[in-house]
Amino acid sequence: MSLYQNLLLLTAVSLFLSVASACSDGQCRLLDGCSSDGDCEAGLYCFACSQGFSGSRCVRSTIADQFKLLNNSLPFNKYAFLTTHNAYAIDGYPLHTPVPRVTFTNQEDSITDQLNNGARGLMLDTYDFDGDVWMCHSFGGHCHDYTAFGPAIDYLKEIQAFLSANPEEIVTLILEDYVGPNGLTKVFTDAGLMKYWFPVSSMPKNGEDWPLVSDMVAKNQRLLVFTSIQSKEASEGIAYQWNYMVENQYGDGGMQAGSCSNRGESSALDDTSKSLVLVNYFHSVPSKSATCKDNSGDLINMLHTCYGAAGNRWANFVAVDYYKRSEGGGSFQAVDTLNGKLLCGCDDIHACVVSQNYITNNVMISS
Ligand SMILES: *[C@@H]1O[C@H](CO)[C@@H](O)[C@H](O)[C@H]1NC(C)=O
Image 1 (cartoon, rainbow, N blue to C red):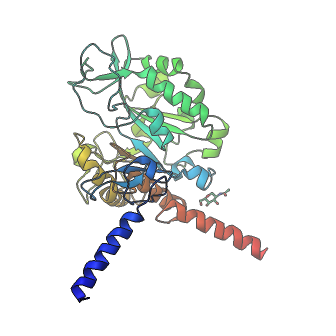
Image 2: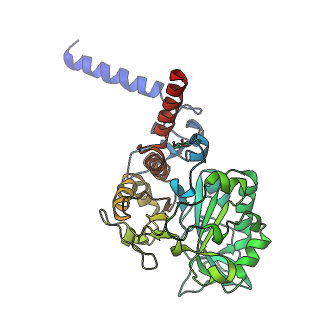
């Protein structure tokens, strides 16, 4: 055979092998080609990110739980949490008004799925509407029939069910709040959530560490609620977000590579009298096709930029749209990275497990 014929044969053989060895039935690993979710290993699903790769590949769909992987014995502010922006604005959410919805969505699965996949921060927009508290996008500062998603109680009951079924987990709600006096208190009470309420009196006021997660779990104070209305802290015991948290600019203004500045309501990012840091990373108008790239390397780069801007502090909350869209690791990898940095100075929380075991083993061997 000529060299050319040899090459042809080799190519044919390798093509055959690559098809023959294609994975399926839950055997496909990260970034392997796939044709359905069932092809991928646990924790992955089959997704096409045309901005990142051709065809469909297995990408991550769940977080590594930092409390289970390591432990929960550190202050709350030593951990990072995946946060879903406009968590209520879900594709295909049942219509609760007489007119079709004419507004955008920011997420693709239910609050229950978001929580089960590892989201621990939920950003929610709450309005007085139709005699009740609703989740809604605003148009001109008001909720309308065509921008409304649904009554808040339905969403809060899903959160209640999750907290009840997962007694070691902590959920943080960040409310863009347009509700009048006592509306939130009533709906949180009706949803059965007051028994999980973390009291404002236990929140650090001057940059101190938060209570230990293990203590928050032991006391069952596992729901943190922040409002954007300052007066509700005194009147209803709902924490005013920017007394405790710094936050970068949201929307397109927060996506300029190399720059990370505070949103108007927040103190400067390097104001260490606030112990929590939140990084927003989503477009002003969500774009599904752009999001898998946004949520990947670009997001990690921004977390590094904001680390510097926040006085060398890694973010505790990372807020994204369409949280499961990525080129592979996405927002899950970003949070694993933050937990690695926060918990052991590593690039990934899984590396902390190795170093913690190494120390434990060494102690055992040497003692
Ligand atoms: C919990 O994990 C952290 C981070 O790895 C470690 O520093 C700490 O010693 C661990 N605590 C316990 C009680 O294992």
